[in-house]
Picture (cartoon, rainbow, N blue to C red):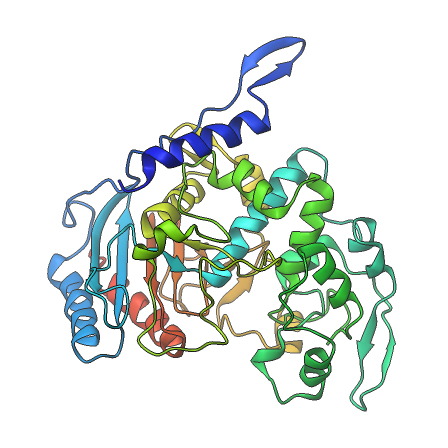
Length: 424
């Protein structure tokens, strides 16, 4: 695997930084091992034996080939698996317009909001250690969140009557927003004027800026997709005592051997960067030109092979290849719905009917209304990347693309392609 040998040294250093021994009842014990970064996460199985109809999986193959041939996308990668093995994996097209390098499992994609589940898992490792309290006010970690204001229809604000809790950040019930979702709304314009789109601040500085902006709703009363996980990143820095990139590496990507998953990529990897068929300077930042801002809500880039390690850890109840990232009960807590019909109705709940939202993941609550099985947990990124873990059917998937305008279309198609092909 490309860059895996060099990555192994970095992962080992991260593990050493976390402490090479642990003291339990006065006895020195070996630290948790790191998944071998040189060994691929992709273990191929027979599609038919795994319960898929190969002919129906070909529908996905031919459709993606057609999208490349028509110029609709430059390239994409789809991986589908079951029972821990991969039934379908294929790269389509090239890494970007004018390029000749084909898309592979080592192509690096901006995963945007697929950063959120990783940062949420980092937060939960701190919860396990007693360093972070889900039910504590955010102001316990970020004092500026003690005096929040809620936007009113006439453009005025009133003091928030409820505290914003840490779990509100993880479930997007904080009252915060993303201004780009409804850019012409008065509150969105107020956020833009207040500095929402700045990237010259650290995570902690950015959280301070956000605290000065009005909430769309009282914390805990409505679901609105937002900068919540960006603020969570600042909370994690305070609780963990280190910068977010270091905490992500020490607690998730390092132990799992995810050597190509990071906030900013080295210039030496540029030959593997995916680019969109249609450019959008407001979305597709340069992977190798860092700003001070480490976005917990959307700053990571990754490969299919790397992100699959994270997905298989989730499918393994918090453990992958003998390396435990979370306790099973901790992951189960993340998969509890934090919404209610009232909360979903009060906000702009775009996961859709039959869905809820936990601590960092969307949740399938009713598979009569959604194709993946009840209990499926997942999320996606604005450029169209997506993953899910379906415990009911023991199905997992990772999809990589850079096509913001097609994100929702590919979500619908992925569900149809995969579950139409699931024969038993």
